[in-house]
Image 1: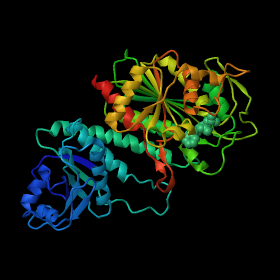
Image 2 (image 1 turned 90 degrees about the horizontal axis):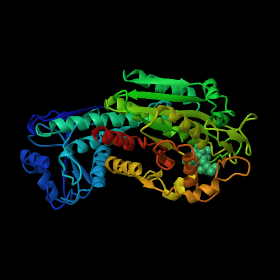
Image 3 (image 1 turned 180 degrees about the vertical axis):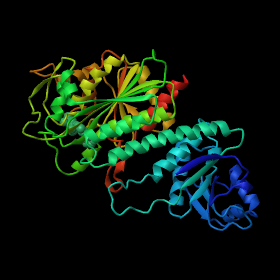
Image 4 (image 1 turned 60 degrees about the horizontal axis):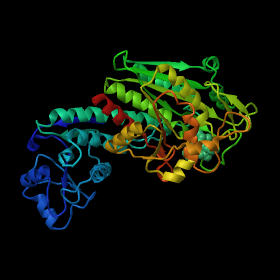
Length: 495
Ligand code: BES
Ligand code: MN
Ligand code: ZN
């Protein structure tokens, strides 16, 4: 799909279809008015006939436009004028994509960036168009021998008058970088676990890094992890024949003296639970247990593509969690890289075991702050469903910064408390800390566990168990929270 900004007047456009918005009560957007005037009040007549009311997300494709240079018009309902919310703006764009998908239209011009929103400017509105078109046109075809027919739509032009052209161009560039970061994360996550192994993930990260001069990669092998005394991480990998990898991406977009922002993404390419094996129903979805890692790779790619003036480190501990004669067992006591001992009461609480050593490793980068993202707990799904990602941390300022970014990016989070009272649930009779905290507050006790390894820097944790992929008929990765983290970086770059 090719995206560009278009500032020619409507009568000079060359396209298969123009997308224009209409509000309720017969109110037209500026572009809809122009199309209406150029077509002998075609739109007004259709409204009068009752063919479209302007309700939010309503669409009407006009296939024949008399005396017009543009052969088709797609009308999109926007609801009440002056009351278009961020969500309804986004939903209207999605409705337009869905309507176009049903046709064989190859090129379209989208005028929806002209819609006034209270909180967001032209740049943001262009960006959303690119992100949403990309998100809804994503197809995973890698492992199908009978490829589904690709979407016809291949060119999208977003209109902007000369006044808005430069911000629109920035919005387009950001939108493309974020959209491609999302697509990369989704692609890696949707791949089957027999293809997307820790070694494969490391190769993909390496290939990605080679495309950018300011990016380098370091892949730590099991022997390196051994040397670093990452016995907690290694214990998870012991039951798997696939060697574990610690992927370290380094993007140097800022001054050499500037402290880096560090992202840590859980990269379990398959989580069978280990000896505490999971029930088989739905276990296939545990190929998605590397979504945090995939998002880190996607975010680093987007940051490099946007040429952000920041230093960013992406760490992805990657492993499988399998049952095996040599696997980690309940009751085993491990010594983490930090020197803390851990009693493994459940081998299925493996994410925190690979993350804790990686969080300790993050110390050597003298980070400005660390954010980890992990499909960490089923309990997060129980608490919050599949709408927001869980956000935990004791640094209020950092959490507020993440919340602000999530609102701009429309990639929601909900903060859960990380009060010290919960720490007691991790008490072990045989080690410094247990790897599970019982049935209550599972998302919080998982974050409590991680917090024991993050005391030397500013840190926040995102539990993306409910948001990183969808189940059921629409099963597939979402690429979240790539938009949120890209926005977090953009805000920092602009500050
Ligand atoms: N990867 C899972 C968490 C998960 C489960 C995410 C289902 C999304 C859907 C994680 O490794 C895990 O198994 N967590 C356990 C922790 C428990 C043993 C304390 C869980 O949530 O059941
Ligand atoms: Mn698990
Ligand atoms: Zn897991």
